[in-house]
Image 1 (tube, rainbow, N blue to C red):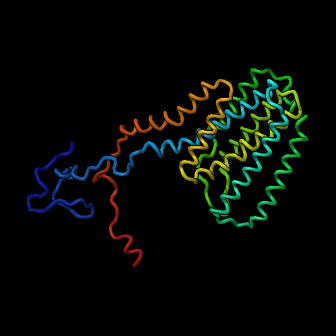
Image 2: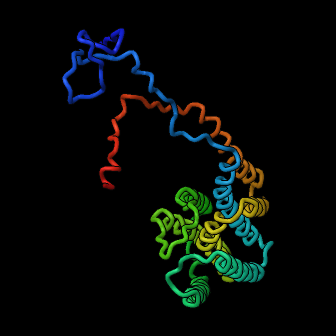
Length: 302
């Protein structure tokens, strides 16, 4: 057991120092009375604030709202309460409006892009046309993809894929860099969402409805996350407005009370729990931590 001396001086008047390279007239287990004088609690912990936490939770709420809106669109197509032609027109118009908003943000906040804007626009138009034509060609095949599969299996598979999509989604901010490499989890998240959309689209009875749902899924799960990351760099009122509009649109999904409970829990409940749990954060620092060499920066710079 460590012994505590009444003072920091030995028999010869030598003062104890916290060094290992000098022989001192003190036992190896000597503990000075001032050992806990340098104790500090939570020195590097920044207290959470309610509004920044809620603003960060809005990103997750927006993502979940898009999933609920997609489920609402599928339900209306399955019940023949939504015209597939109207869905195709709305999806195309939304894509055009999104491109206009994106170009406007690019104009007022030009990022360091490696390629010329004209080249990027040409590649975007080319990729959009290829996806549009591919979905038209694959719609008859997708419609009969899961014909022998039961509805319970479809529901379980779709739920699992959407959970994977929400768990692996990229909720980080937009990085204004010449080259942005997508994370592996983000790619897996998009693949899971598109797979879920394919499974649900195969339960529809019309090729045009399958095409419209798949077109909407590409915009919701592949394009909107990119647009959402760009919205995160905009002022807080814009993020709040987008979250509110998507939340209201999500109420059209099946089980609207459950959807509202999930969105309220994520937006308000999760930040409140995190702030409440912060009182149990306990980090101590003291003289037992590893020593930091002094003047090392000056030696290197010299």
